[in-house]
Length: 169
Image 1 (tube, rainbow, N blue to C red):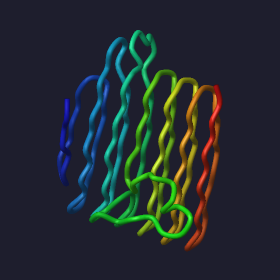
Image 2 (image 1 turned 120 degrees about the vertical axis):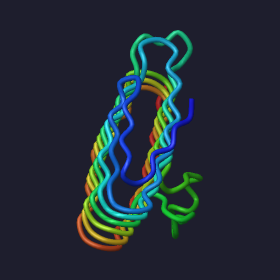
Image 3 (image 1 turned 90 degrees about the vertical axis):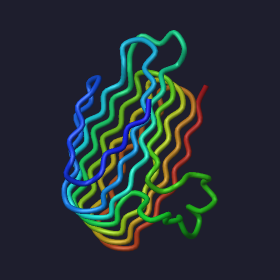
Image 4 (image 1 turned 45 degrees about the vertical axis):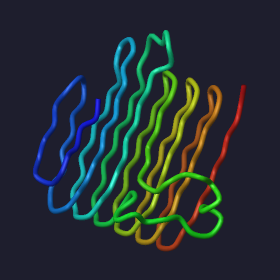
């Protein structure tokens, strides 16, 4: 199931609360719930923010993924085909992509500022990311594979870059 959310619209479906205000925000939601469903809460204010959100439960999973996202500012996520630079370009992640595959994963993301690029991937179970980005021109790429990986990160200021890859089995 694919849903598009573009400025000034509100979408409520299958445990999903989404809201985007201002101009040219594009949020693509792709949730595939096999058992108990996924939960996404999203509040975006500003202009030209771009997100691609994908949550897929593992076959036979009994608990969904949860993702809370709040963005205040302009050109955050992966707007207008933006690309990571420096070491983050080697991560293989695309700015604005937030992906959870598995079960019992959680993401809390809070962005306040402009021109911040980020992408988070969780593939497995019991993984968590708590991220806060404040400022301008920051970049973050985090990927977690396996089980029970945990990241809490914060960027404050301008031009900060962080790339994290965690693998467990």
